[in-house]
Length: 124
Image (spheres, rainbow, N blue to C red):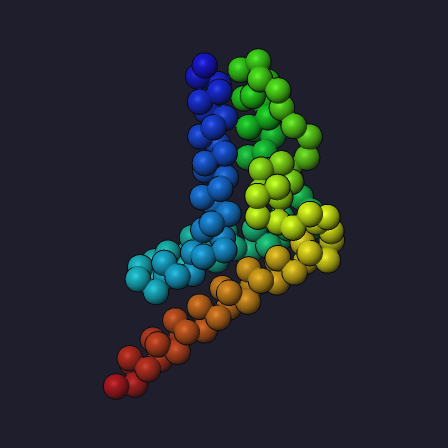
């Protein structure tokens, strides 16, 4: 039972990390110190997507599922949990690159606004 609960917690953590990678720059607008956590997380998230690496949380969750006697899956977290929910059918390499570019554009846009806002405040 404990392994099953831990595996579920890993799924929640994994999802929260993905959400932070995509939208964490918005938190920087309120709490400036978040930038030191978000930029490395965003770089890691983009690299995972572009290079098609397996996030270390995925094998951990699979091992916990196996220890709990539950069935496990092949492939990564995104392919197993998120593709059926938020990605269109037939996810291909071009779509993965597009998603990575989307993450980059959102974050660069928010950080650009953040820098512009800080410069504006200092010049007043």
